[in-house]
Length: 106
Image (cartoon, rainbow, N blue to C red):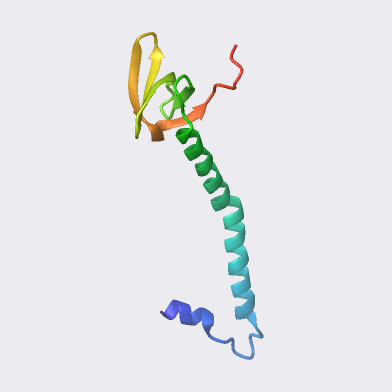
């Protein structure tokens, strides 16, 4: 409570409005942080959620551990990935981070 009253109290006459300029600086700093840090992260998270919801059989994916594979079966929270001929692993959907289907392979 003391912290809040510190910011809301009026400035003494000799300071000449420095509390208002301090409050404006804090607000501007928060807006800058939101624009450059929080907003891009939220956008990236929405893209990842969309990617995971739109998965289908045959999509090529990469896990957070760097395992490349092809989706062979999709369940509620897990995905079966074929990483080699007749070799399948089950991973959590949250561990899928990239779709390289459109990437050019050499």
